[in-house]
Length: 532
Image 1 (cartoon, rainbow, N blue to C red):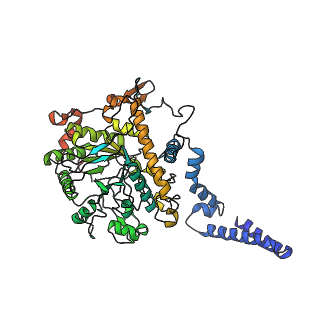
Image 2: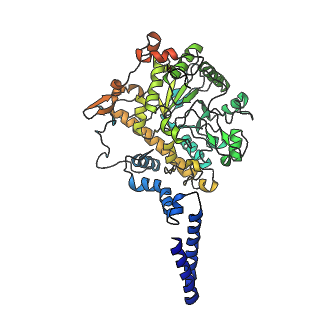
């Protein structure tokens, strides 16, 4: 390669001297290619470039554009990840208010093991003109909130651009649903357009912390008093990365973000993996009461990705022991999204939403607490089907993050962690963020939410139900074999109210024995003995 390029460069020089100016362009081109080839052949970092100078760069180029090639030219409409093309197209169409129907029948294999479907009624009903709302507020809450069936899930300013936060908040204000702030603090962008807010407090206590990183009750109370803050959610863990805290690189900690989070500007912002203000289930529940008092009676709850069943029972036992209950619990599935997380955590840590949601629901039912606590579901909620399925599995309402991002213009480029989002949704680069028009995208967020909830209500009416309370596990079925389908009522055990307090079922007995209110974990007993 080097020999050929050297000969071509020398030949072009000769021709340029003999034939005139035009050949000097060729000299420049061959000289640049020769310089690249020399650099490739002499560098020691990439073996491919040492053996294949110049042409080896095509391999890296193709690797770089592989996601786009896969997304736009190779994947089928129904098998893309994290969201397939059919789902993405549906979100975009609903956000734009364009045609949402399709022709010629489903492309999915309805005989595939794992396929799920809803059971319709032979006597379907007309859906209600106004979608029902869920009252958030237990017996200790004096300022309850009426929650929509679909809301904006937790996304911080920092992970999202300012324009994305503004658009989602204005859409929430127009549509009458709530926006979760994420753990990055309560910012002016969340407050500007008057949308209802669920203020999330993470282990970093951003926006409600001292300079040393401790929880600041007075600062929290002052901000929680804002009329836009309707609920407060304490984040125990996030579905996409349970067990570790978030990290915002130093380059993204701008003056605005530093002010919102009450952290130093230009210094890497790290959330600890665990909270400082509590370390046991009893202390967690006591802190719930403290937060509710500081908010002057607003709904207070917590969000978690479910780990062990014994830890869920520990928290429930602490509620009974202390006589204190949260107003809501948000169950975040391991399939949930994030701006940045290690692949090992995204792929292999935490409980998926279906299992986690049903576990929390059953634990609350079995402890006689379900009527006091509302349950939200978060994790890959994007369609009316998702809302109905999660209600059947135990949720009262749902939250969506990535679907709301798509309604705001996200194209699933999956470059959220690079600060190079091509559409301005997940970047702090002002040049990139300016591409997101707040006025236009706020209407898209509002239309997507309204259309999706409307479709969920129409599906429920087709199933013979007007209210969520009329749905039951018999209405959701899953294919478990080539010749067999089972309902969720048959596939899973569903506890009766107070059953754990009367006589603990054998399948729950071991976890019940492990559940103490004064410690989280150890997760599982073992008899393997010490390891050397």
